[in-house]
Amino acid sequence: QVQVVESGGGLVQTGGSLRLSCAASGSIFRASAMGWYRQAPGKQRELVATITSGGSTNYGDSVKGRFTISGDNAKRTVYLQMNNLKPEDTAVYYCNMFLTNSRVYWGQGTQVTVSS
Image 1 (cartoon, one colour):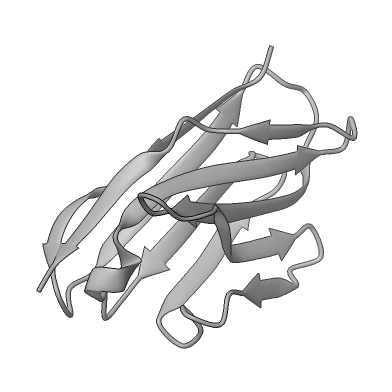
Image 2: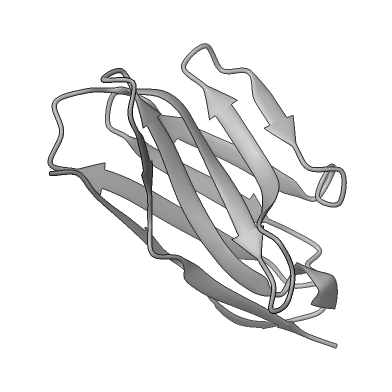
């Protein structure tokens, strides 16, 4: 079975940076696409960023110009570099992976808190 684990979350002040990491283990399949989503208390889960095996990236409007997604599809690892963090970025960040077995996997989430 596939296990997806995120790390790198924490508490940071406004304007600071964090780098989130995610890795999927227990699968022989590479990732067709990988991404990050987030959910703040009382709000719906929203897209943060995605990256395909071809390197195409997509970002949510609220993070464009501040966040950068990168990763290795064969190794099933994905990263999210978050710069110039704002209080509204506070949320639980979830890693998502779409593998070449046509199945989607989610991590348990890592908390990011940005203080003003």
